[in-house]
Image (tube, protein in one colour):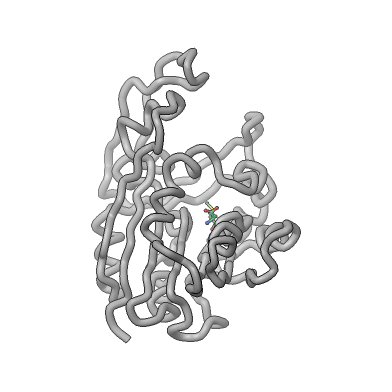
Length: 257
Ligand SMILES: C[S@@+](CC[C@H](N)C(=O)[O-])C[C@H]1O[C@@H](n2cnc3c(N)ncnc32)[C@H](O)[C@@H]1O
C-alpha cells in the first residue's frame, strides 16, 4: 500500500464525501455516470467489484439495480463512511489496495468498475493485473479517468472569461495544454464548495491515452469501447464541457482464462 496516497484520502475523506453528497457532483451526474452505466450494461445478477469505491454511492446505485456488489477502498475512513450510510445490506465493503487484492479469489467477478481512481494510483499496472485476475473469462472492466488530453489535474487549464449570468460559472475563453507526453505526478489542491482548501493535496498521475490502452492490452484485455462523454442536456453550466471533453471512459474484456 502506498502510504502517501493512503494519507491523502484519509485526510480528505470527509470533505470528499461532502462534495459527492451521496449522489455524485453535477459533472458526475450529468456527464460521466450515464456513460459508465451504458458501458456496464445490464448489471442484474452480476457480481460487480467497485474498485476504489470512495464513499460508496455507486456501489449503492448498482446494488439497487440488481448487482451483487463488493466495494474496496484504500481509505479506512471512506469505508467507515460507506458503512455509516443506510446502504444496501448486501454490499460488502473492504479496506484494501486495488493494486494487491489478495483477499479476492481468481475469476470471481463479472464486472469491475474503477471510476475516477486509476489517475490517483501510482501502481496502475498492478491494478489492471488484479482486475484481470479477479474477473471471470469474458468479464468486463469499465474505468473512467479525467481526459488525458485535457487534463485539468495535470498539464491542462482553461483560461477563463467573466461569470456567465446564465450559469453563475465562468465561461471558457480557450484551453491551454502542453507536455502531453511528460508522464508525471501533479499535486492538486481541491476546495470544498464553500471555498475552503481540503486538508491535503491529492496526487494525480498524468498518463497518455496510449499508455492506458497499451497497459490494458498487455494485461490481457481487449479494448471494446472508448467514450468521451458529453453533457446529457443543454444546461448552460456545462458550456466548457460541451466544447472540450472532461472525462474519458474505457471498456475492456478479459480475453483469456
Ligand atoms: C476520486 S475518488 C472516486 C471514488 C468513487 N469511485 C466514485 O466515483 O465516487 C478515488 C477513490 O480511490 C481511492 N483509492 C486511491 N488509491 C487507491 C488504491 N490504491 N486502492 C484502493 N482505493 C484507492 C480513494 O481512497 C478514493 O476513495
